[in-house]
Image 1 (spheres, rainbow, N blue to C red):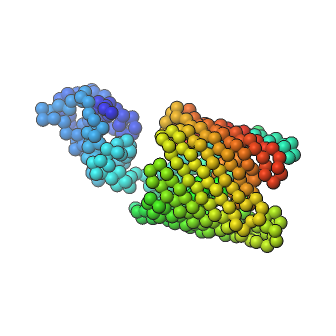
Image 2: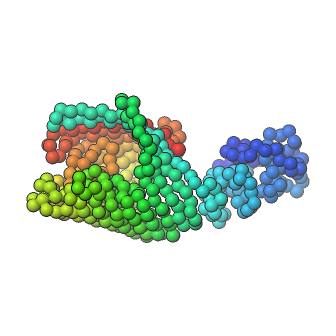
Image 3: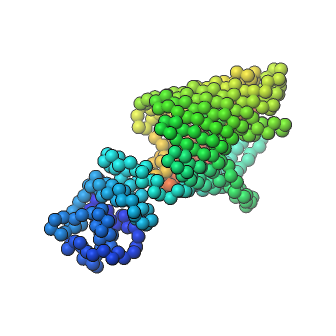
Length: 412
């Protein structure tokens, strides 16, 4: 991919170059003072980023390659006394030409240390959910708006502090809610070792979220490359694993996952302790206060468009509704950054009440089984839509159930 030198500078100016008129003398005879790119060219020349040619010309109309532009960016990155506006410009250029810079042996991460210490991402999400349950002939419609912020602050070369701020309201009620701190944790990385301390996401990676997608207050340690291990321990206050007398459950879990080429596979173990399990609907003697969940999962990618994945889990402490499983066929996939991209899936899932405590799915929940289909489409960059439908049964009630789910998400 090529772009003209002048076009490259135009892009640079658009994405954040300072508008200050520079005092540097004009070094190029073919860039007159009234040229729209005069300020940028003379400043880059004064900083030693561009040098022109021996005949005193800049030759701004010739085509340059991305590699040549990356070389210019690398020179700018090597300067340690840039102004704040220059740093912002170079940061954006480095992100654009990251692959070329890596080929040149320039570590973009070195530049990132000069960027803002605190970064914010997030999304605004609208969900429409229509649930039907024949056991009581009920129908529930939900119009929900969620807004989430994800701040990340750099502490040093290895540690960051991350958080998640949540708020939501329901459109049919025109209500509102205050923003709450849903996650807050320290995140440290040392090569292939990652450590998280605090309230953070808890996701059962071996079974791809079949059993747990919630939060944990504690510690998570991950390490490995082709074979990866994740160990988590702490307290979980999800509504399905706590009782009125025991407000949070003790949790320990380990995931082992393997990924090479087209195949990924995993095996996991989770132990959860809480008085909520002392129930006749859980075990025959109603005397167990723990869940012991073994799970396996895998995914095979046939080509760039088609993938098949499945997972299975069993709670060896429960006597009833103790098994869960999922098999899913995926086609393509929508990407936030790629306008017009889309994807679809079809799946069959069985989510036993005493093992799939907090599954990750939109249209199929704990104590349900049946078929699910869905599609996603990126309307514009960072604007994604989803439509999903479930048809099956509530397991314990043995009655028909269905869910229609629609989403529009604006990410930033």
